[in-house]
Image (cartoon, rainbow, N blue to C red; front, top):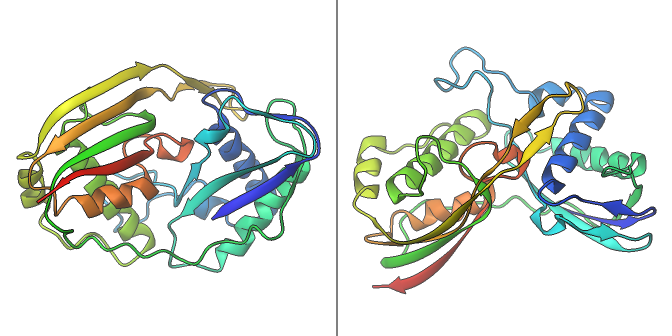
Length: 267
């Protein structure tokens, strides 16, 4: 979904905080207006859910990094994206749009600047992504657009990156779609470890967020930059492409883990 607004007051998005501002405002309005809050914003595991997920992955991510550090004067337009994964309940889309419209009326950013939502910024049709192997691909570049944190790794070695993408896609499918990925997880990991990281230019960035509800601060940093990989990538490129929509790693709901990919060499 893409939402477009026209600022009625000056609206500022501090550097690195745009997705957090939108997420926080979305949660506050959702809590006050809708019975969807526990299903969307604080989903909890139920018996039979994926192992180890006491707090379920949220069924959405924001795409708002382009707003970081920008200020919009009254009359200026801005937009942001929301990727929503709960395909079992498509009727929730219109209600989510109403939440963002109300958020604009109540105000965004540190100064709570108001904005009017464009009524023509309608949700897009559902997007279906195939995970079938692509054509023969030998080299790719992955750009880490927003701070990325991969559990158990300081560097984005391909085996770790591919495993974290696989696990996230499988969890989202099990919770919000047709069930976990029907693949051999161990064989997938073994193939991924054969792909080499031939270049890595990343740097760590430290950021924190402060919860308006609890007053506590939480780190939301990670690494930015890019890495290049070489090997038999045909079976992995569809997973990388899916991850451009879902994000990868920790705290994707705050806008972390956004990636872009470029194919450098096909066979």
